[in-house]
Image (cartoon, rainbow, N blue to C red; front, side, top):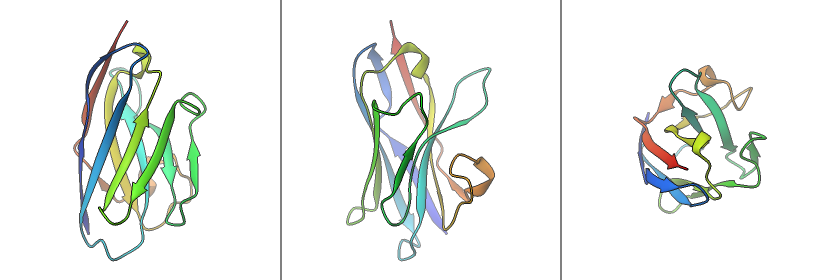
Length: 123
């Protein structure tokens, strides 16, 4: 098992940037693929970006070109660099991990979740 702890959220004006971090602890000797999700009030939790154990990345269309997912294996940390933030990016952001996923944006494919970090973007 692994434990995930997100950090780096906060309040920012539109056009600004934030970098979210997700520290992974526990059984880090295994290979995991990981993703970032968000959940805004009144909406369903949605997948934003995914990075495979081989480093392959994929993004939701609405954040492609603005968000970048990366990981530092030496630090057991996953990142989400968010640029050109918009008010509609306001949400609770979560990282998730799994040894294997069949559909990168499907919530049930992920076994482990963090508690989330809030991002608020003002206009």
